[in-house]
Structure formats: structure tokens, C-alpha cells
Image 1 (spheres, rainbow, N blue to C red):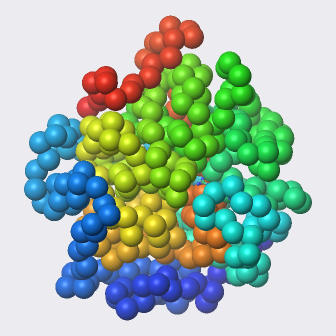
Image 2 (tube, rainbow, N blue to C red):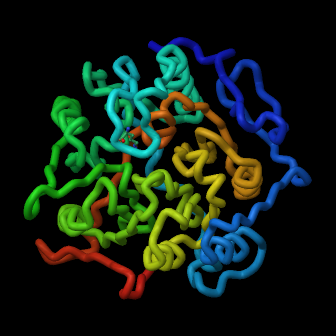
Length: 373
Ligand code: ARG
């Protein structure tokens, strides 16, 4: 169905001099080997102390006493991430502005966007993922960012409720797609109009749900999610409008590792993540601004929109193969690799936790985070 991506793969254009690598001409997937002596280590003045402390604490070989989980958690792969829904960019463009990255005058190159999207599909499939397609709809240019369509839980989709009117009609088509395939579609029911933007703002991680709020999703959606799923929801407050969805500052890799940008969250949320993620890859602000946290893991391959050298070296040390799949045209509307994909194989609900019906379990900053170790 898709054109062969061979020969169309571009290296990350911003990084050619610091990536030393090889490519197999027959493969769309590129592997890079990172060169230690080229490591830049920045400590930027504008970054908060907490970021610097955590960078030193977590990404050097020092022990992290604050994170008691760090030594005791074996690395096991994510239980999801082998099957994705994607939407071709036939009607993609920047025709309105609903996040700080979107500027109508900075138009995506349509041909390049098509090529980058097909290349991403090829890279995901080559990495071992199944990709299913939802038909694009005219006048819904952001439908390509299908991560925001909802949150899959087994055979059920929890349908999003978009904040902006421009995206709200997408839900009709998402709902139809899932129902046509025999999946149940659950709607968020609560007091008033609760906004929730799907997998863009929520990830299952080590038996609970980590969910962002503040720009697109409402904090009140977390109580509804907890009730629907029967799992603890850890709420993360997003404070930087450039990282308006949680999936731009948090990328789970396995049950031990995640790529994180702490500068996107308030201090209390940082404390929660610090307890939950045994060994984070803490991004510098300039690294985070490449959208490298907006990446997708398929087994041991991490498909990324960009990979700053320090990040690549750490990922490689952790045993990941980095595949850079450029999506420059989609960054113009504020989204990258993760945003363009909706995981179809997530199971979040946990009946074993036996919550009483209607009793949400939410953890905020003041509570102690208990981990299932
Ligand atoms: N233009 C889209 C919006 O503002 C981009 C969505 C990015 N999606 C994501 N999962 N971060 O809604």
C-alpha cells in the first residue's frame, strides 16, 4: 500500500556532524553509533536547579538515594507498543493556531509531509510494529495527530474530548473506526465539559496511569479515568505551553526507563515522577525542544523525530537502537512521532486492584507514591 521508503530516508538534518553511523541500504531503518568524545554537556542558566540536580543525579553513574525503586527494578519491556493507528496527512496543514508551534504563515511542505509520514510508517513496520490506517477527513488537518483520539484499554477506546472546537469533530470518525472493528467506545462522563486528549496526555506505567493536565486535558478527567479503568492515576501538572501535551515531555521506554523533560512540570509533579521512574533520561531544555521525548518504542528500537547526541549515547548504553525518522513538517503544527501514532495494544485496566465502583484513586503531590515492585 505504501511506497517503498528505501532511499527516501533522511538523516536528522540538524545533527549530521555528530552522528557517526552506518546504514544498510536495503533498510529504511538507520542505526547510529554515538561517539563519546563529541559529547556536549550543557548546563543552561535558564534551567532550574532541580533539572540540573536530576541530570547529574540520574545520568551520571551516581546513586540516586531519593529514588528507592532505582536499584531494585529489573528492566522488562513495555507490554504495549507493537500496534498503532495512523492517519495519512492528505488534508494536513496549519490553518489555525492552537498551540505555540503553529503559525499559519509557516506552512508545511505538503509533498515532504507525505514523504515523511510514509517513511515513518515504513520505519515503524520495519521495527516490528503493525500499523493500521484511519481515513483522513477533509477540513480536519490535525487528524494526523491520532495520539489525541483517545486511550485504548484492551478492546475498549476511551474517547477523547478535545479542548479546541477545531479538533472536536475528529471524535466522530475515531468512534466510527473503533466501533466498525467491534471495539467498545467509552465516553468520559462527568460534571460539566471535561477535556481529555487521549494518549497525548496519558500513559500506563508500572501498573498505574501517568496523566498530564493543564493545557488540553483537565485535572477532573483523571478522576473519571481512574473510575473507568480501576487504576491509580498520577496527575502531572504541565506548566510550559511549548510542552502542552504530556507526550512531549515524557516517553516511557520500558518499566525502568523513560525519557523525561522535568522543566515541563511543576515541582510537585517532578517529585511524583522521580519516585515512579527508576532510571530516567533527563533532558536538557534544548534537547527537549527537538521533541526527542515524542518518540515511540517498538521492542528495542526507538523511533525518534530527532536524537541529540548525549541522548543517543544513553539510549545505546541501555540497549536501544535509535531510528531517526524526520518529521519536520509535522513539528510546524506542534507534533512529532508519538503524536502521529495511537497505540492499539494497550491494556490499562486492572480489575485486581478491586476499587469500589465509583471510587477514583488519585495520587497528588502530598501523597506517598506506593510502587508495585
Ligand atoms: N496541532 C495539534 C494540536 O495542537 C498537534 C497535536 C500534537 N499531539 C500530541 N499528541 N502531542 O492539537
